[in-house]
View 1 (spheres, helix red, strand yellow):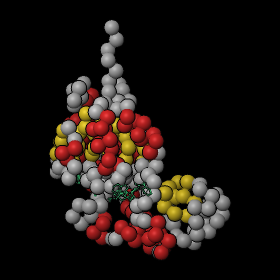
View 2 (tube, protein in one colour):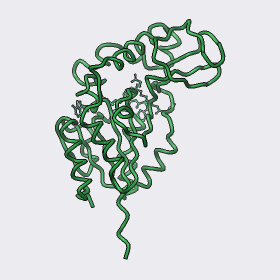
View 3 (spheres, rainbow, N blue to C red):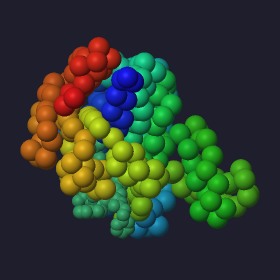
View 4 (cartoon, rainbow, N blue to C red):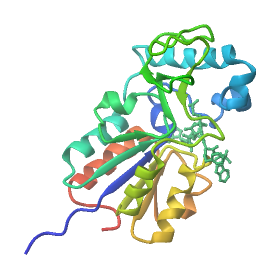
Length: 244
Ligand code: BJW
């Protein structure tokens, strides 16, 4: 007799997982949306109105990511270990545009809101690694066009990336972990309801405190991600899988 396959795991992460690495969240007290208006820096209209301002906002965040003090924390590291050691499928879907999951070693990852260390050309659609500052005067290295580079991030009103792959993985998963996200931004905020409708996956929220949507999850684990995530990963790798 063959053993039952372990359940596939989909993990959704948000800004809370990177907070202990020194990066601000958006909606916590003092977070990014209390410092700048999202309409100015995270919408296509804001970029059309003042591209220099939007570039400056993302240039500063890109520079912060290069600060040696900003490193993956135990939560990022534990998720990379889960991918390496778990005998079933693990897909990490992150709303974060930082590269801390990638630096921790995660490979099966979909950055659904884009990547801070990449740039995209609106003229030729090329996506390129980009670690320097960008401005409305910067030239596209691929097509030579000026004024057509934009941060490779998903703004409000734009379609997040790789949604078909994400929903295919959700439809097939047995365990869904939502880590460090307020659950206010769609479509990511709707993943847990989508899974409840299908009824196959056990869903767990990990957050500092219960989010407004905590009641949509089967389970909740509360406390800093740097403590809760490694403890849960240890538990899963011991074969004690929530809901199974
Ligand atoms: C800790 C912790 C610790 C702290 N340990 N935890 C359906 C219904 C209603 C609205 C919509 C809908 N569908 C679409 C919309 C519109 C819109 C939307 O959702 N609006 C809502 C605000 C209502 N969505 C969109 O426009 C999306 N596109 C879309 O749906 O396309 C389809 C479409 C296209 C065209 C027309 C119509 C539909 C795109 C959304 C793009 C979001 N982009 C941003 C910016 C990205 C670039 C950048 O970083 O600058 O993404 S906004 C920002 O919010 C960022 C984040 O990824 C995202 C989510 O935030 P997150 O990660 O949850 O952070 P916080 O700060 O909110 O929460 C942090 C959490 O961590 C808290 O809960 C803390 O407790 C916790 N925490 N310390 C553990 N140590």
